[in-house]
Length: 308
Image (cartoon, rainbow, N blue to C red):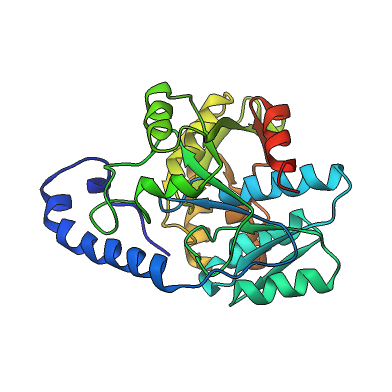
């Protein structure tokens, strides 16, 4: 989905109220799915890493994190995701990070392919809303800079589902700063849910120490990326935001390079953006390598392994 999140998703306002009747369509669609779609159970355990807030919640990094966790525990995990031509950046990014990755227009096909390759755990990157697949563990991602926005369903707000969806989930991972009030809100919905904090760490930060930076990003929430750079002491002199999964043209990248040269800035972007523009052959574009850290990791690991 290539768009920038509208500002009216941040709070209740005249535009969101005007669109509220259309959100009833989303509600009705979700309800009909819940009563009409039959869940299929598979022999292989399935861990779903999903979201309720649309885009920019860190599903893919967390999926890769869990993949590495399980590999260290001598499992043979595989990441599966549904194929969308507009998501080739995330597909390339994940392929570069893990050995066992399956992507098809139907998630079921990917699951069966993984089984045939003798993988013994499935990690679904996205798919919380796919009710045709019975999951053994549902993990929901949030970002502390957005949380639930104005709390309304699409299109009046940024939510794909009502927060009541958390009743079928076991784990919540919130990336960023802890928000105790938000945690209390989640536990009112599901008192048994386990809540963890995560944060990103830039692995190659020393490389850019003292450098003046032009940063650009076309991800779910570019401001999260810019905030991460500043939190690591980067001197961000200029920043450019693009819609999520944006397909850059050569002329646009050339314009970014000219803009950076005029101000004598080094150009950096996200790993997802880097893989999206790599084929264009511009050597002046560099990427930030990010790692994920889970606070209270041992407890998180225990909860994940519990279902296997």
